[in-house]
Length: 44
Image (cartoon, rainbow, N blue to C red; front, side):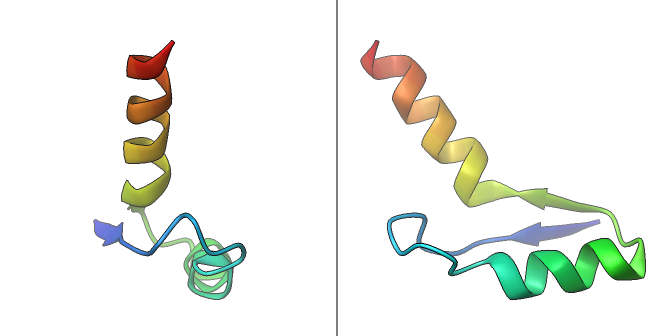
């Protein structure tokens, strides 16, 4: 399983590799998004 790391503050930064992984059917975890969601949840 791959882990996708990138800067979530820059729009579209992880999109190209995310699309390639989806197209290949490769399993991955979008770490930047999950971390951003965790931070947002803590702030509410």
